[in-house]
Structures are given as C-alpha cells and as structure tokens.
Image (cartoon, rainbow, N blue to C red; front, side, top):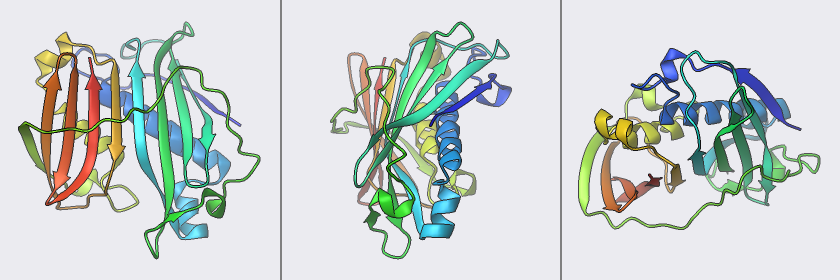
Length: 239
C-alpha cells in the first residue's frame, strides 16, 4: 500500500527565494508519513488510543535534488514502507515535480514507545502486520554513522508551546528549524544543501533549554543539540 498525493508549494513552506524551503521539505515528508500511517490505521492517534503507545522518530534523512518554486505546477508525494524490523518501521517518501523529476527523497525510521513504561514496543504490538510489507526504495539512501565533537556553540534556544506536538515533546521538524536558524539567509541562498540527516537520541520538552553546537569541515557541518547533560539530537548537513 502507498500514499500518493499532489500538492503545491504554499507560502507557509516557501523560503526567501520563493522555493520550497529545506524545512518545508521536512514538513511535507512528516505530513506524508503521518497521513500514510493513518491510511494504515497505525497513526499516532490510533497508537495512543488503541495500544497506549506513541511513535517517535529515531532517524530522518532528506536528500535534495531540485528546487520547487512557489505556486508552480503540482508536485507528487509518494510514501511507502521501506523496512520493517521487530522494533522499527521505516517509511520512504519521494517528492517529484510535474515533469516526474525527483526533487527530494527521504527516509524516516521510527519506533513505538509504551506510554506506561517508555520502553520500546515491538511494532507488531501496535498494529503493524504482515500485510504491511516493505517495498524497494526508489533512491540510494542509507543512514550514516556520525558523531559531532563540538568546537563551537552557535545558539541556545528554549522550547516553547508551538514547538510541541501531540506526543508532548518537541516535534522532529522543529530541530530542523533550530539548526537552519543558525545559518544566515545569505549563506542558505548561496549554498545548496544536498543532504540533511538527523538522529534523535532523547526527547526534549516544553521549557527545556537546548544548546546547539557545530563542527565544520569542507562541505559538511555536524551539529549536536544538548539539554543539561543529555544529548538530544545530532544532525549532519552536507552542501
């Protein structure tokens, strides 16, 4: 089973060049994944109501190939399962323009947490069944192993109410926003992001203060987000 939908670049997800922003791509991916899970009847609302569990993203990666202008012809979003293990479910999302050209390709890996114990549940206990089989990926995307040895603190942000999602923690796309906000507009306009990959280590919550550290080399920036003494997320940005 797949989710296929068409949409346009709205003003709210456009950047300063009037194209779909990097954050906008992540938001389109998140919306596609959650809508697809709803189609399978294993979405977050159902997981909470039926299984006393919640889905959390563990890794998320987007590869960017082409820009999509604001109010251009419709682009097509496809979401499908690319991997199922005992503890994780991965959904791939392709974004193609009206010519059928790949503009971005993403993979989201997630696991289910039991709300009583906050331990990882087997995916079969939250509605994933044998009929939800994996399909071959449409692009060569793999998660990478990376660590950040921060040598520069670039920002401190506090988590506020609008950063919180239905799981009562910081929404995954908000970390993308926090990281992209460390770049000036001029740099984002002059350098094209080719890949952006995040690994989520711990959750953060309303009023938490997040420290953002950065390590740069050539065409790669590595970020570490911490709160108090805990690592929250890591990110790799490849130009």
